[in-house]
Image (cartoon, rainbow, N blue to C red; front, side, top):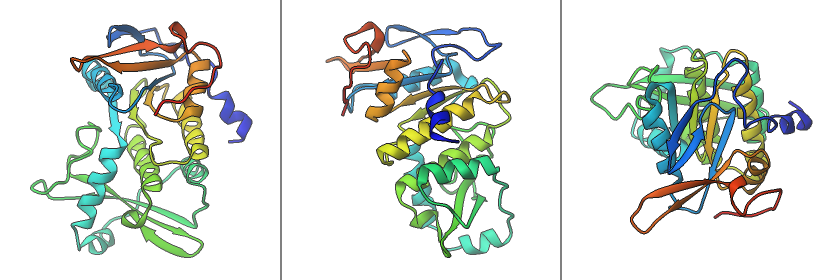
Length: 270
């Protein structure tokens, strides 16, 4: 996907996919059209962004998946680093097929061309901590945990040796591949770009929006982010919401186009 096509993905986000009706839910005192192609939440740390995303998931139940990449990354690393038998486990498994487009997306975001990518799903005993993905991905077997083995410029390394940004991208795309057969899904992604550079963050959002637009998906994507570039683009597309937390711990959201953040004014939320 060329840069111009990446930029095109930000157009028309404030409307449902063709053939889908609007669906309004109440979140944080605001009417939110959850059927739009893309929706972004911003706000300072502790301002209620994650609460807003969890509330959307609570209302939509099985119609949505919620991926907290920070939690999934650390849970995955804790599990993998506690094992000493992974090399034996993957001898019994075949790697999952990875679509060429998925590999291209990962390489563009991570910023490296892999010689090889191998994805495995490790089936861990139900008595062990093997289910961090089960709550997020109802289509997934409870005990499965992804394990990644990649080769770059002749050097092979695995999930445990990846930086958090690289690991998060692999976990995200592996997770979305598990729900590829669920059209019209609402995919809620809590700060998927948290460990990425600004350039990688922009590439991530553009390619996820393109993935959601596919005819076989027609996913509605809901993000939270601190990325200034994403915030500005989402604001211009009129799909940006600002979250706030009051003294009693109750969160509220405001659409940026209804507030002082209208237009293309640049602002930063940290």
